[in-house]
Length: 315
Image (cartoon, rainbow, N blue to C red; front, side, top):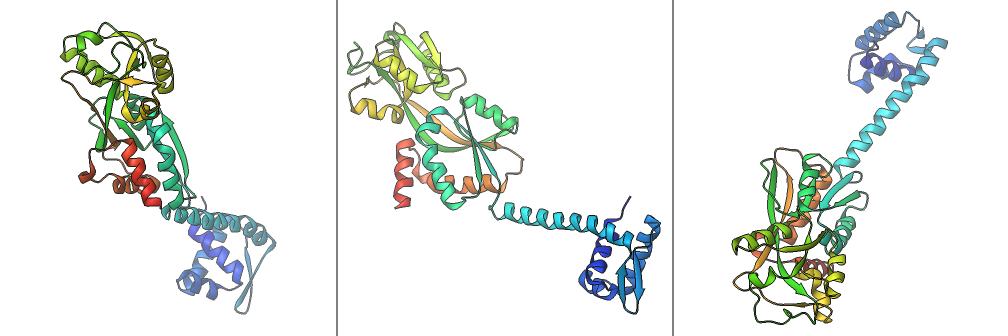
C-alpha cells in the first residue's frame, strides 16, 4: 500500500526539483526527505529521480507517477476548500420539516429571511403531519421540524416556539355560525371534516371531545387545509383549523366561527430536533434565526405575529 506521506514528499520534490526545497515546504529536514524517497523507490521497485548536484530530475517512471500523484493532492486542496466553505456556511444543505399550514403561511417568509443571510445553502423543505415530521427526524431525513407536539418521544427535544389558537369554522349560513357559544353535545351532532391522524390539531380536538364525553361524527379526514376550507364553505360540514390559517376567509365573510362553551383550543408549536445529535452548521444557523424571532418573553404568538415581526425586521 502506498504511503501518502511519502507520496506527498515525492510531489514536492518533483515540483521544485530539490530535496532541500521540498524539506522547507514540508517543515522537515533534508535527510528526512532523502529517506522518504528511498523508501518510496524501494516500495515501487522503480527509480523515480536522477540527481545532478543539488538538483533532482524525474525519470520517465517518475514523470508518469507525478502525473497521477499530483491529481491526488489537487483533489485534497479541493476537499479542504469544500470543508472550509461548509464551515463558513458558503455550501451545505438545510433539511427542514413542518406542517402544511406552516409550509404555506410561515415558511416562505422564513426561508427568504434565511437565504438573505446564507444564499449558498440549499434548502430541502418537507411537509406533513406533526407525527410524520417527528418520524422524519428519527429517520435522519430532516434535522429540524417546526411542528405541534403530536406525541412525546424520548429522543426528540421540543423547544416551545409559538401558540396557535384553533377555532371552530362553519359556513356563514350554518345554524352554529355567530352563536354566543357552542356546546360539545351540539358539535357531536354535526358532520366534522377532521385534520388527519397524526396532526397536533386532530389530537387536541379528539382530547376535547373525550373530555366532554362526546364522540365526533367524522365525515372525512384530510391533511389539506385548503380542501377543508372549501368543503366547509359549501356547507358539507364543520371543522377546526388554526385561526391564522382562516383569517382572510373570516374577514371576507366566506367562513364563520363561534366560540366553544367552556373550552379554548391552543396548539403549542415547537422547534423539534434530536437530542444528543450534532446539528449541521446550516441547522444551527436556522435555529439562531428562529430564536431571535420567538424569545420566551414574546410567547404566546401565532403565525400572524411571527410574520409581522419578520416583516418589521426586514424594513
